Image 1 (cartoon, helix red, strand yellow):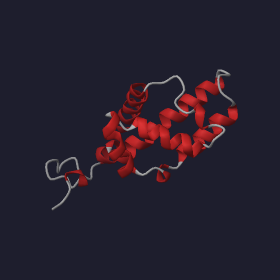
Image 2: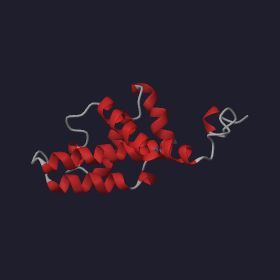
Image 3: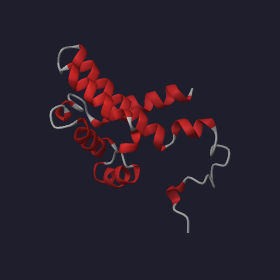
Image 4: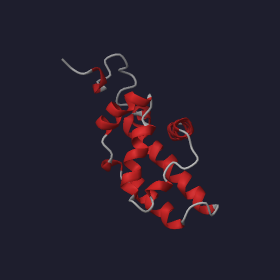
Length: 125
């Protein structure tokens, strides 16, 4: 039996494989979440609230979506009701001991979700 999360498009054949599917799928959402977190750290650095090196480290860590395990994020997201909580933990580790604490400073999970969803909408339209 195929998993309901497999994305075969059984109930959405017009959407599956479309350009919109590519820009609104899990990979696109992960990319947008990481972009939002990296932008937040860069904004803090621009305002002098974080070292420039922190912005560089977080941006570098967020650049490679391949380092983040979507299946693991999905599983761990169940506890908090959104993927931001486990993603922040993973991105913090990826940014390193020195600059990891700059990840997600001053933001809520909902702030990042909202920003990411607007990025997805913008990139889709």
